[in-house]
Image (cartoon, rainbow, N blue to C red):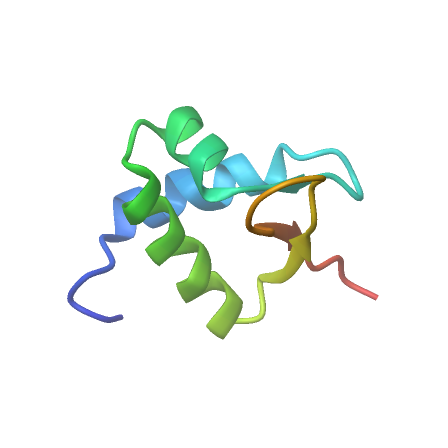
Amino acid sequence: MPKSIDPLTLDKVKDAIKQLVTGEGINAETMGARVGISRTTARRYLEFLVSRHVVTPDLVYGSVGRPERVYFQILPK
């Protein structure tokens, strides 16, 4: 486990991901609000979970501005 990843916070992030409805994604800002951490910290944990193949990222393009990175739970086959 990397030094920047706390196991207790990681468990909270994983629990929040498990509560997502199938096919529902979550961005770092929403994850941060649910868990009580900053958007930057939430993104670090979500990217860690991408490296562990727990979630998969995708870009969602809005009408104006930058695309938003949204994370989706990888469901077992």
